[in-house]
Length: 153
Image (cartoon, rainbow, N blue to C red; front, side, top):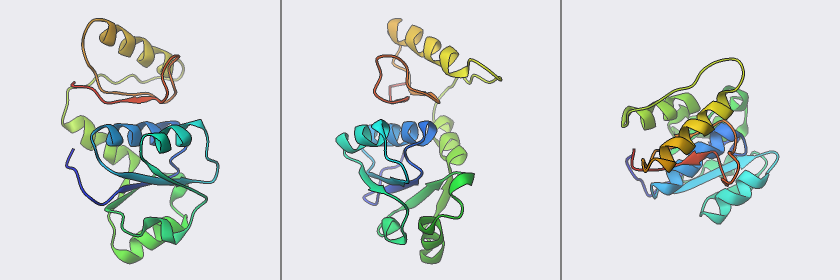
């Protein structure tokens, strides 16, 4: 991932997918900021790793951001409107995931039920086997702080 002095700002950073992506970017050395209506354990953990976390949504949050990461749910947030006004690139969460995975070989788990459990089991098997995978899980595995892990592979 290309590093920038400008933070990547996540609108809705407390969600499992967004907080995991933010954790991966932080692990690469990229500065991260984010906001959410409801800060939680994930946002506290990200803050302890160096992310700047804001409670609520406000246009001022994107000042100085290099790009803004959003989901469909955040499309009407004032942060997103301000990013559009300033010409700050707005990237969908799925597109950021694609950028991250475009640099690596990956395993994807899909289905109706059990994706988090199955992905966690695969990750644990790879880690215990001596592989150092990067992992993005839609939940937090037992013993982990967040659902994102940046590894060598």
